[in-house]
Amino acid sequence: MRHLLASLKVRYLVAALSFTAMVCLPSQVVAFEFNGVKSIVVVGADDTKTPIGTVEFRPEAEGVAFKLALTTQVFTDHFLSMREFKCLPAAKEISCYVPYPYQYPTKIKPDDLTWLEHNLLFLYKTPSEYGAKLWNGVYYELQVQDNALVGLPKAVDLNEIAAPPSDLSTPPFGKENRGEMEPDARWFKAIIIE
Image 1 (tube, rainbow, N blue to C red):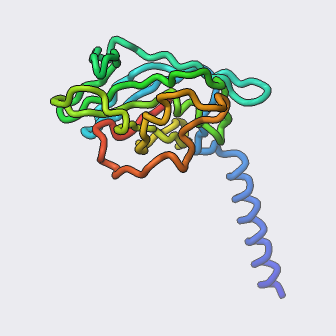
Image 2: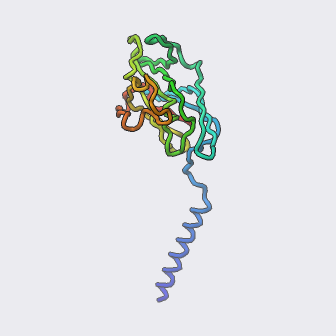
Image 3: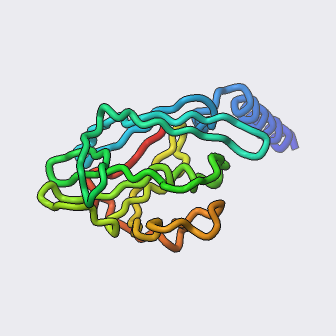
């Protein structure tokens, strides 16, 4: 009986210490904070990071308002298919920013980043190609990873936004409109917001 009581006391003491450690020690997991100005960085296939702008988050009653600002100095101008594009050149591939051309809600929710993703559309081409091939669209699907938003590339056909959608409040590139890409298919393999 004495051994049973001693064993129970030890178990109680271990449980109490474990609980105290959980409550008192700081957590190592940091969640992304949808507040303030964050940097937007593209990550190349060689792991180089290029800052391309900022996004400002402002919490509101029904979600989080956002405002994107590109740093145009890091882009080069390319005249493609009778239009000027801001592009990021790389040795084997040029990525050109495609601004979403219609009015859209400037709000997101932490579990729905679709409108922010629609503001990070790109198309890609080789340096030797002339013109913009809109079917070579890249959509960076964002997910919260610790204290950052990480976007991995998905394939989209930008011809789908050549005409305005019937409902401007519904994003045209839903999950069903995004195709899978191999992890190393694009030179800019990720976008990070931190």
